[in-house]
Length: 305
Ligand code: F1P
Image (tube, rainbow, N blue to C red; front, side):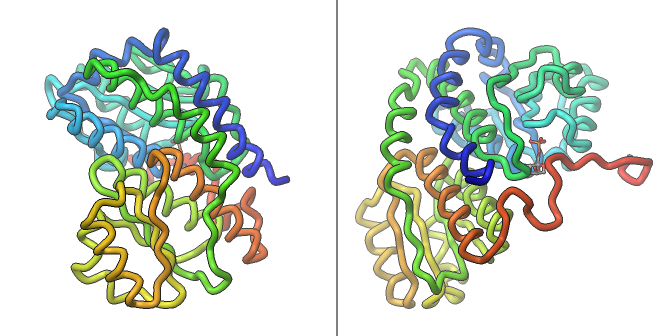
């Protein structure tokens, strides 16, 4: 078994532990999440922020934005939540330093208590039970998003999603299948599911070096549908209502295969991590060593200042 696969399968336990800290140490994040707040990260960590910012908006907190770390500029009166598995990504560190210099409240979500990003925070939440050797983020990203969801649910007076570890355990036994001819993946999701769709598509890019696209579902007809065909697999994260069923029919008419999500979008993300792993192995690749990638992007010298 590759260590990426082992890390994928470890997520039910990580999620249970994440929900435990949401009730305790992570409470320090609740206040900044009320907004105004910028959720900042790179790669998978940016997509976690994208999903969390939309989740905040859907729960009535209308003053949240997600920003790629490379594009972050501090705003007076706006807290910054910096998300980074390693806590060493150069753009995330630069964003944290800029926020501190501007006098902005800085909270961080990392997996390493000793990382430079953790150390510069006013409030640091550390998922120190997540130990990923992989380059490709799996449980670190889903645990960070689950943590933010649980905190936002509590801020909104809703029960946190305590059922998800068990739902994931069940879902891991029913992986998403992809026909042999699959060479093109499209993941569709609206609202907070769009950030989840971006992260799912990134897994397939990183592990299987496959062409992927991601859109809000009803956007797909507005041009990108022209690329759908026999080698296309389209996964829809939104609940299958009348409009989604109509969209699925239009997509199937192109020859593409459509899979409608059956579980919580975060659970569907893990099923797509499993799909990415299977596609990687089917293509004779090593998911533990994704081409051209490093576990953390650390830019040395002055070329990035
Ligand atoms: C961010 C990131 C990862 C990606 C790869 C390179 O890392 O882009 O999302 O999978 O590992 O780094 P981090 O800031 O979350 O540690």
